[in-house]
Image (cartoon, rainbow, N blue to C red):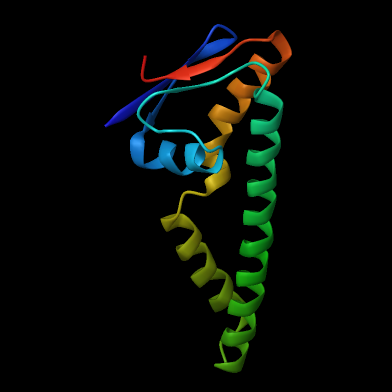
Length: 119
């Protein structure tokens, strides 16, 4: 199922419900229908940016651990890089999924507008 985020500050955003749910859970909102008021946009932006930063830290730590394990297994640097590239190609990052909504929230915050979905 698709969720359509709407705001008078930006173009509509379509997102699969499964991906929208993670973002909205982080913001404490229901995935079926809701609103992020103009007053809430600043806090919502901060929460999404903090989660993106946390994701980057977790990815960096996982990469470092994978490098150490690969070196212990005797793989050379090229093989390690190839394996990491294969893994990265399979996964869409949280930041990539969050970016359109984050940009909408920034525009809504700047213009004092709400963001709604399920209406």
